[in-house]
Length: 488
Image (cartoon, rainbow, N blue to C red; front, side, top):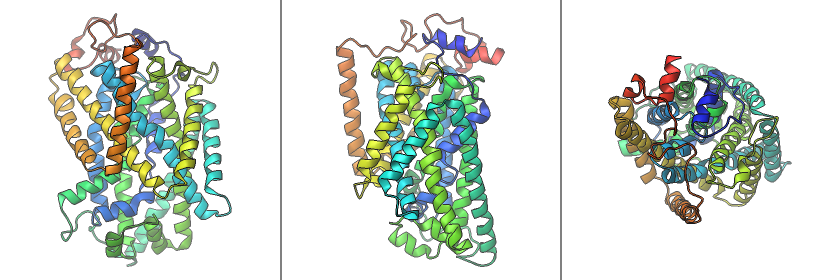
């Protein structure tokens, strides 16, 4: 059975082009997370963890792997675009899916604008003659053009940018290791993994709530489910692989940088208000040229590569919600030849530009947007973990206790800790956003627009109305679709 046929069983037609394989999905996830993401927030994580920055990233990777497991399980059950909106809606119920999609929108809609702003500020520091607002406009126009040309063009650009980022990272790590061997910085040590003077679990886990921002983006792979030409399992495999690869890179680069920090005690005490701690470490290792290289790489990676895939993921989420009438129908329009959600892509560009221009006028713009992105994503992930338990353990009577109960519960507990320890401003704004989503949901129900996902039968289980008889594969918690894929 083809995936196009599978999609039809859920009441949808195949509109997007299936042209992405496992490698494309993996590259997309790596680019979304940015292999050099710690460059920009290294100082904040170093301070928050009392210098144990490598340990913080290692724990963050493990924490996100639990969420990746939940995504993988739901992607097998429902190989559709829409990410957590689709999974919570079909795993629990349409109203819950709407709220989950509404909360993840807080993440997805803000992320491109945040990335454009960070990159524009960085480029302005390198080229002061070009104002921040002009860099914003240039980044938005460039990425919108690439996304408009189609997902294949986006995938090709992703591969080029990933190679460039990995080259810069290899240069830094190579020169950094040599510098440490020569006795520069603090010399060789494992203090980045454990420092007895400052270690405490609340301290480290609090820092994880900051570091987890670097891992956000692996979930964007799920928005490409209807452009994946391989089996539905490729979505889950690419998520886990991307997380493991980028997690190792994060740990290695922060370990090397921690050994090269000019004054660790001052960084822990005073923080990194200018966001230059990583570049200062690069300067110790290789001189001014390496500091400039790492700073420029951060600007390009965040402002072009990362925001490019963020814009693509956000447009797919808007498309999925619009075709179910949870958002205005015009956002579901697909370009007849490019096969991309064109109106959703243009809307994301306009919102990103407006948010970026507004936030660059505020002193706390980057901090506020970062905390809101984190909060929205974490709340959406909580819905996801619950969806796995409800769909597999309650509805399908799965006996895979680890994948469908223990792992989601652990993932839920970790994320709940992050949410509770989020900044008050993020909590307040996030709850206001959630309240707005509840009001909108009520309006949709009262006006008769429903919140009924296409293809769901009278049982409300999220399965197709005219599904095939269950096979033995469903005894382990797989949907009939996943079992069919397994037996092809």
